[in-house]
Length: 307
Image (cartoon, rainbow, N blue to C red):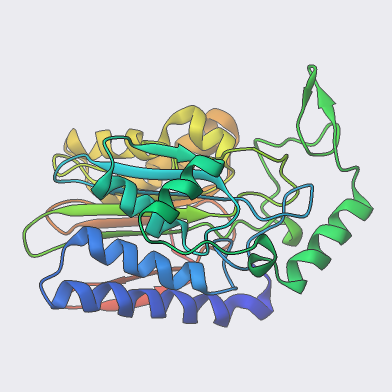
């Protein structure tokens, strides 16, 4: 997160808090709250979600999102969609109106259109900042590499799974939200444009249950950000929720999740987690992560959470 983007991140997180809290204070569900909060961030070009997302190797935006209800364990996810401005809306439609959990690509877009969501051109999701960022990246680093016979979409020898948290071109601004409503139910949602210069069709952790997003009233709601490949390998959101189900507080579990991510697979990222009693945890092992929370007693935002 470059210095000149800090205020924009804090502003965006605050706007999302307002939207989510508005739902909760009116007696709305945690599911509705996380959806509305994430929509605000998808609409904010500051973040890597919706319009303004990172571009893949071909210069296109491909989006992933998941939303999950802790009360029922119902979930909806979309992957690699190119014509949806708010993929979390489509994910919510899947949760509410489909027996399935997950749709990808054209199938996801067709489902969304059939359920009243407007489609857009991919060009509408692309902004000049990201065109220039991709150009600079591809000028400095070869645009594809082969390692063990597989096309990574990154430079040969680059550690795709560890990432480089101090590299300003490889920021990860995946957005997410967790919420607890008056009924005691929790929910989580995560939305992303993925990583810069990713191979077309690459799917990260954000839209996969238990990896980048999870919610269960018997444990916790969690949303992650960071390099998707190591997070997927650890099923990190579910791993964290299981620690809470075993009796650990979310604050401790969030910190342990970041330690586990770094020590086990040299991964970088962040997590927000919330249990049905209203205890929450926020942690990251990157230099910065925009975060915010609001309760009936307190509200706070920032870009560094002391661990």
